[in-house]
Figure (cartoon, rainbow, N blue to C red):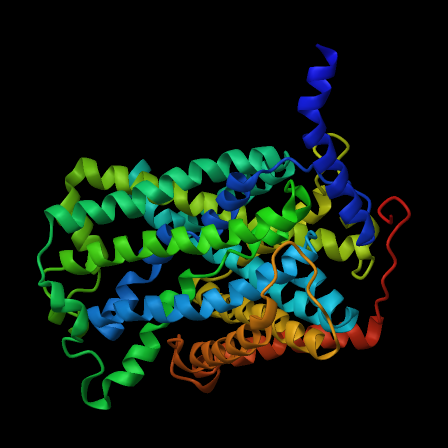
Length: 490
């Protein structure tokens, strides 16, 4: 009997040993809890990507800017992000390390390049946490019956951020549990609602998505369509979170690339179904494009779901927003921890210290809670301005890895993970870079300004420049050098 038991457990033990040996070969001792399988890794990435949060946040903007034909921004951006995903999957398969983008760039190019790349990405994540938590009161207020004001908006955001920090601090298994609940809310709030609208509240002809209904006006439709691309650009990222938590995934070289693909694939299906359902349920496109209908999504939900159905939809939206904030904070926490473990930021010793029971870094978790919570206390107009930095900051972080892959190949890097692009590597990397740079330009030029002044008009590139300059100054003045502590160094 004992022999049979040991035989059954041997593959698991062998995989645990292989995962530990792989991490040690990359320079680190296994200290985080390796407990996640493929599904949980996917759940974290999917709730970060969150088609529910994305569609509900920017549907009104996409429809008003590009008319119903803005729908075609979805396959366009999906194609580009698919190229980025393939690049990430190849790198993450060889270097499955906490902190993802920072660690990948470091091994492909070098520590200083990686430090600045991760710096931009870290701040983009911190701002994104605030940007997801800040509007939750708009849905939680009507659901729970409290008045939505600046004070209630700030309090709701801070409560959600602190709750996310607590769940993250309690360990990766709690994170996975909440992420799985979030997956249920995402599917119900996107696929189920989208199909319901398509079958029972279809008010427009099928050909509606091929028409602009006056969007763009006399200036031509191309500019309006490019501006409406922000709809899809804002939604289709988050798959990189699967790599950010790679040290907590079993057999990460195989499962992380698969989880990334599942995240984008399932997210694409959910987004398409919900977007089409909402588009075809809008009674008057002309009213939306002209501005007479300022809240088309709210109008559709109220007309289609009734009081009880609207409450249920609000509950799903709130759960989706909370799980999204939690997943983003999880990625940000691992990134801060990865910097601290390498000893390349101020307070590294404290930030890298793990809780003895939950194997999570309390100080790093606090950083990813305190900074977003502090942003929520700013005036609402200022918060709106700051949020414009988040998406382009993340896209720049993405492209730093794509560029690093190209530099690595030029220097002779041969991908050696379980997933490789083979002879398609150069083609995919270059195409991903072209897409990413184009997306960054569109984000910089077409993001709607929050005012009429020069600063408001060019806030996106200006904010990126400020964050990049601060990081460059730190590099020049402090000159951080990698110094992994004995307890972390393999």
